[in-house]
Image (cartoon, rainbow, N blue to C red; front, side):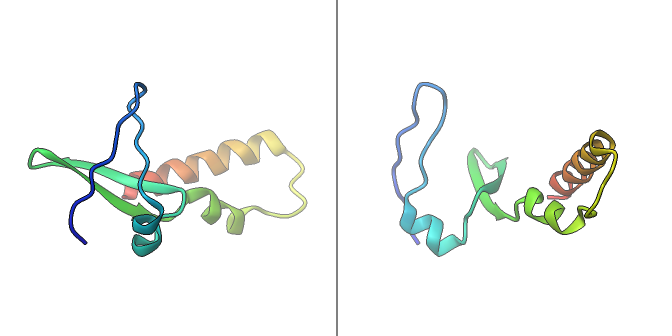
Length: 80
């Protein structure tokens, strides 16, 4: 795959070129690891998509359901 130089804006954001995103299967979420003096980006499943499969249709107590889903999302993110 090689190396590609990208700019970092004043807010610390960078754009991953679309060709690389497609080749690596990057959608909305990546896991970032700092190791050996560099930054490693790992394609990661979007926890909100996982939550869509967990949501119970006809939920009456929306606030409780949202809290529950946020907890699930946090657990999913912490696994990676």
